[in-house]
Figure 1 (cartoon, rainbow, N blue to C red):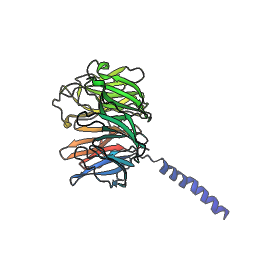
Figure 2: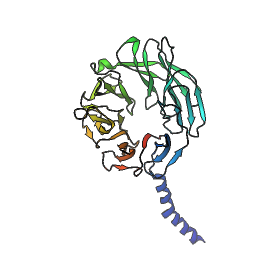
Figure 3: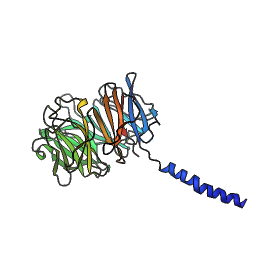
Figure 4: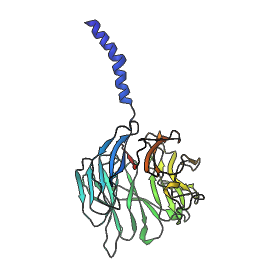
Length: 357
C-alpha cells in the first residue's frame, strides 16, 4: 500500500504537475473582430494564439448608418452606441445598463479600466451650438460635466491617458483659428494647453490621430495641412512642451493614428507614399514602423493593408489586408516576417480591438 502511494506521488510529480503548469503558461491574447454577413456586422471573439477558437458575441448592431459600430470597453464586457442620441451602454448579453437622452450625444470613449466613459455632446441650441465634455460610470451613474465653454469650439472627443488620470481634448479656444490640445484631470481642471499651430510652425490645421505614449508623458498627433492629405507627424512632450517631428511634410500621405510599441520606443502606422501615389486610396497603404526619435523608418508590407495594431505583448502585428473579395485579417511578427492569414481565406473580416483586463 505504502509502495503504491509512493508510485502515485512520483507519477503526479513527473507527469501531472508539468502538464498543469504548461496549460497555465500557455499564451493567450483575446481580441474582437467583425464579419459582414447578410447585410450587417456580426461580432466575434477569438485568440491570436488559438484562432480556431471563435465565440460569437450576440449583440444587436447599433441602429445608426453613420456610426454602426459599437464602441467597446477595453475588457470587452461592455459597449456603447451613440451618434446621434440617445447614448446606450450595454453588456455583452445585450442588457442595457444606461441610456441617456439628448439632442446631440456624440462620441464616447472608455477609460483604460473599463469603468467610465467620457462623452461629447451638444450643450447649445440652434442659435448657438457648442459642445461639452462629460464623464459617467459604465452603469450610467455619476454623470459629471468636465468641460463647458460656450466661447470655444470643442471637438467632442476626448482621449484617456493610459494611467487613467488625465484626459486630452482638442479645441479652438475663445474664437481662435489656432488648433489647441488641452489636458485636464478627471474633475475637469485644466492642467495644460498647447497651441499646435504655433508649435508646428503653422503646419497643423485640424490635427488628428492623437495617441498617448504608454507612460502617459507624450502624445503623438498628425498635422493635416492640405487637400492631398500630406501629413506632418509629431510627438509632443507634455512636460517640456517640445515637439519632435517624426515624418516631414510631403513624405507620406493619409497616415492613420500611430500606435505605440509597449515600451514606448517605436511606433506603428499605415500610410501611402506621397510622391508615388496621388490620389490616395486604400489599396496604396503600407505598414510602417519608426523609432520614437524619428529614426529607422521601415516599410513592413506591400500595399493594400490597413488597421494595424501591435499585440499587447509586442510580439505580433495584426492588420487588415484588402483584396477584391473584401478584407481579411492577417498577422505577422513584430519585424514584419511570417505574414499569414489568421483565419484561412475568409473575407469580409476586420479587426476591432484587443481585449485587455
